[in-house]
Image (cartoon, rainbow, N blue to C red):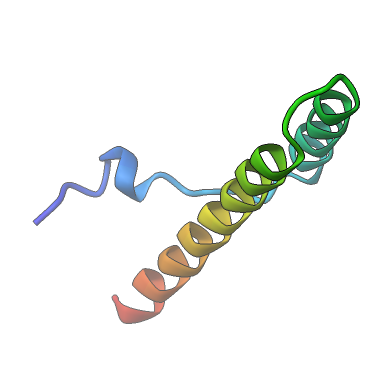
Length: 64
């Protein structure tokens, strides 16, 4: 069993400003010659991972 103060239980918050900044950074990197597929995949994975973590947290709260 994990302690409720471990990083696994730290709340993951949706931060639209951080998401916007990350998307803009990806666009600038692509415009600067970075690999389009790699940048979009990284951006997509970050978004998906954060969304899944928020869903897990909600399920844990409703389960307890």
